Image (tube, rainbow, N blue to C red; front, side, top):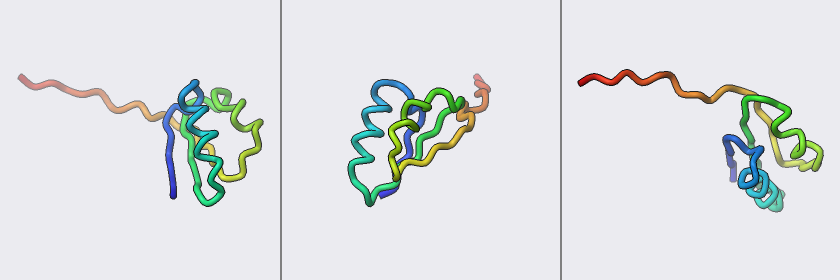
Length: 65
């Protein structure tokens, strides 16, 4: 199974990443804006985790009344 986690550097994201990494057939991609946010996850040397650095902020929404 392929998984993607946005904002994986926090408490919930880190624990979810570790849980998903237990299954060696799964691939998990974690996405965050700044690579230092998931440096602690990289130090765990999990083989089935990919890291992507990108901004995932949605564009502004225009409201029409």
